Image 1 (cartoon, rainbow, N blue to C red):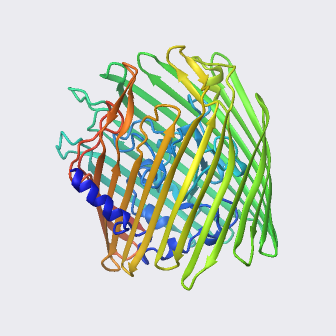
Image 2: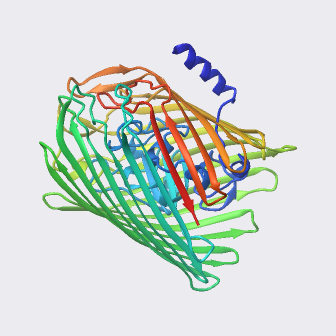
Image 3: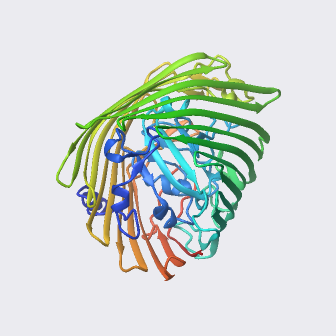
Length: 620
């Protein structure tokens, strides 16, 4: 097995395995993509000072039936422990050696985070892939543009807005197995269904969708009895847009998500009839006014969270979040892009009494694109926190692009800071709260190179170094949240490679080295590889092979409070799709963990063995 891992590592390192990012013209649109999230301006990638990861419509289409977490964790610098286990597990995004609360999730440009949760993270299980148009991932501290908690990465999700024609529909249905490596019973136990109607009639656009996920067959914990723990999720969403005039556009949107997940007793590692239920309701309004050199945007959303834990330690949790964002973009001579904004966030949670805090953030950003290769993205934000007063964060991100015969060579560097507030639960909750907690501070430095031959190749290598002060952690001996006295550092290297040697063949691979010092760095592999090779056999048939490697990691046995070593593991999968009706009806087969590898992702929790999923997508 080790020889096989080393061999595949070597193949990946020289770029001979990866994936097609676009089905029709593999790699072409991906290599020429426009990025938005690192500056809020639509800029060609060669003018961006970040290595932004973009997941576009075709890649999303080929991953329907999977979860958002399964897709995100294949990208460089990102790890989501539990995403390869039973669907109902609680997921947190680790980026560049950071923890979940250091990653900010945006939906249509606005932050989403659950103020009633312990660390104020957003539950990725509430997101449904069928409602997503694209995902952009910006790694590094970006608090200047997006505010608190944007310390290790920002995951910006854009939902579907509507089709160009008056009426269009999308239907998806998938069915598959859900089994561990030790119990290959091939029972059908995983079901996904989605339906969406959308369109555009003159100045009115609409999109309405619903879907459900259900899985069973796996126990939450690896116990001798392996009692099954089912998971279900239902979502509904809508969006209505209005083109009031050539300059003004308005939209109202909303979504609802309901989760119901069984789970076991992790203290003592025993089967139990526990349940976790969660409801999210979100309503929002967005508007944009465009004039020749600029744009004004006003976005706002209200989200209500309610959850219930049914166990030996039962509890109900409720809270809401209100977010308002006003910003003005202005472009001067196509070279100077300026942005001024004001962001307001209010978090509310009900404990024995209602607790609230708010953030009022004025911010400014400037992007300079020269005609001689120099590009600069810089900005500052003043975070006015109701509990902690004012905190400045800033960023400076220069890059230099040298045109080549077929593309460009770009050098990038960045220095940025971030502000991370303790959650309401950590400050005022009923489980180890500490009102004397101080906010975390975070600074990130990175530098790297990117080379591109526009229609053939893009490769990048980047070094990052992050420093955390006053890290908030739970002290088991004192049974309360505390600020760490020591400094925590994380550094690493990210290498990404995309190549389209033939019109029908696309390869992509990424490698991440991460080293975290200052704590026990549980569940963080030092070495991680994700690779795919995709081939378009014809206008109707596409296939890909994917490979993933995770090196040895540590995890904590919370019953003995000791760390244990987890073995490295590698997984191999494949995907094939065939269109019965061009651009209308597509059938697919997805096989994960082909070699049925047994592995541990989170100590004591079940992981999936070889599984198969078949399905169809119908568009009209």
